[in-house]
Image (tube, rainbow, N blue to C red; front, top):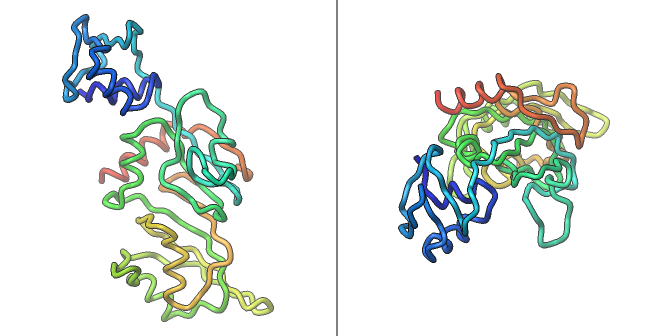
Length: 238
């Protein structure tokens, strides 16, 4: 059972707010009866109409995009920048799950399933996000240990992380490593490394749960495979 306005919005007929206005105005019926109560819940077995138009549930879709740098992870941008939706043409109203910064590349999920999106984006759930980081300077063992234990950003300590595959490029005085986190705060990875004195040069998310970039090129997208979707949900709920 779901709230009536959510079912209408999910069908693609209009936004949830507009659906609430239509319900209050007496423009919505459920099984032939006019409904004006916003708290009304319906199931997909119920017949819902808006202004005489039958509402049919929108089929859920789930994509993985290899996001390139230079795209914002929003549905539109007031600065006129390109968005990730320019790379995943679809007639359904899809949106990104969480976000990657404008200058960050890698795995980005997109869907029209709000429940799934919330499940994936919530830090309460156990979905690993793995990043490849290139930074200025040489990342030392004690700094890696600090990051792994958690560092304080804006008065809050980050959760435990995993730092692995640390390598150095002596000529350019840079380091590379992989970091695995289960959070997704604003600029989190960049700010974590800043706390131990390293500016991030490039950042790429190479894995989201079980989803990787294997076989994909920048800008390409594909449908999530059924086993990936099942495993993501299992990870989040475990």
